[in-house]
Figure (cartoon, rainbow, N blue to C red):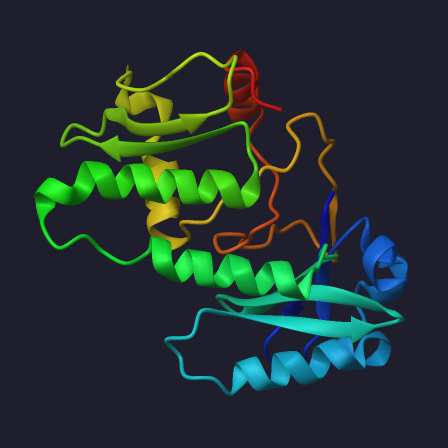
Length: 231
């Protein structure tokens, strides 16, 4: 619910899928978008897609800030086989904070000089993330050769139990999910209690959401997270 999605065909920019909440972000009802060319209703997005279409083939996605209808939107455009998909989010933007966060990220990603320094690097990395995004808990999870996993570093607020050192079976993260994370390592779940937003379509097919940042989550995974006390 924190973003809207539009899927267009590459050959004619016809909108073939749109999320039901498009009006909340784009001020256009989904019925007025579906089965219409993108340029008829959303010309500013058309310019961004045109630029992305001309990018080198290795570029799988691009990010933009767009001033649209008296608001700023975060836009992601990505390649989805014979389609382009556009995702729109409303940022909570603070320029000063964003610059500080960027510099913090650059510092945290500096690699250690020796493998023996990895534990210290993990600790510094997680503390930096913890202080930046203010989550209750940050964990670093490492896969073993048999695809079971282990929490090898953790930073958390007071009053929370620890998962540090715990091992989890390979079945906790199914093979299909692991393969998807190799293609798109980013996954955001803003609220485990939030309702899924339907995607409307011109036919019975489904869009390719491999590179989507706002796709919904499996109910099984939501139940798993709720059992761990995550919200």
